[in-house]
Image (cartoon, rainbow, N blue to C red; front, side, top):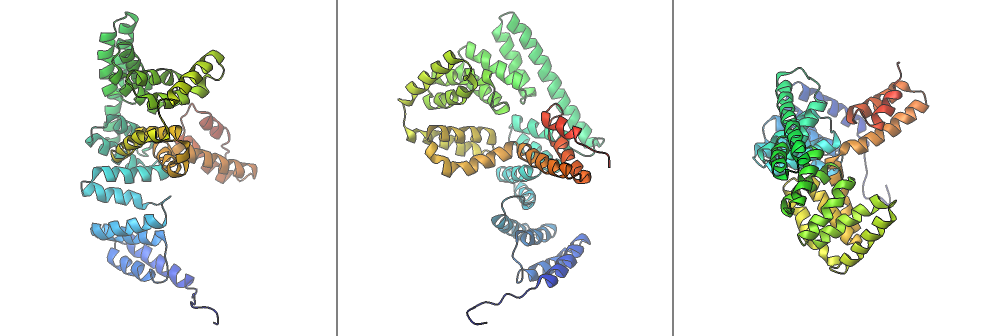
Length: 394
């Protein structure tokens, strides 16, 4: 073998047999025997899947330290589509590291958003952190994706969320009646209760933020308008109020970023567009590209606290202020987007694949992808309706 320092032997057949044997032992509950085979395979194999399987064996043997180290090694080799995050979340939760458990489970959710166990874990964990917005968000996801909708636990959670929603809607209706009577004080009191019961309602958050703004309580207005923004980042109503709240609070970089977000929404209104451009140009004189630093500090704090909606908002502010940060921040921004709405990317992939199989008349496979689209999308969405129209009886 002149000119070569290494000889690579083809051990694929041996590896396949060992892998099959190890998996059978694991299925039979013989975790230590399976582990011995997996560890022996490290000499001839090197993959994230192998470290994942080793981690699972240690996890089943309740050796959480070795399980954690192998799951982490697996994620170093493959960051995407790695089921190790689910187990890492379990380990950190058992060790009472709730924040890190949530981060791992959110990563697992971003890979497979219809995993009901992950949704339930996230809902319960956020509840322990008193983060009701996120907790209700994931309870609603659990109710959507749970396979057994007749179980006692499902019905109990469903009843609780339905009660929260009912109370929120009731308080909202009372608040609207108070608004019609120009009684903002009563309306705000009712809406504050509604927001506690039903924190994921856009209408409740926006109206409460608007009323606080009218009452010149800008700090509270900021809280609820930001929450409304997290629920609908393209809402003209929210972006038409949010920058003016920030101006009142002296947050000129924050106002600048919101005006920049608002600008594409007023392209058809020349007068409004020119007015906002002038405000943007005036604000640009009050700071420089280094002014993003405060927003980055907030982004990192929100990320550490598992508040990924506001972390994304602040990281995007950094890019709006200083576009030269694209290389540094684009990756984390995309990660946060998959944390918050993984369905969007998966739906697009499934539509593309389903469409390809549909054109080739492979309806069995096209049905598989279109069914996934229907599971992940809202029933009133264009994606759902399109996927449903493409289902074929085979």
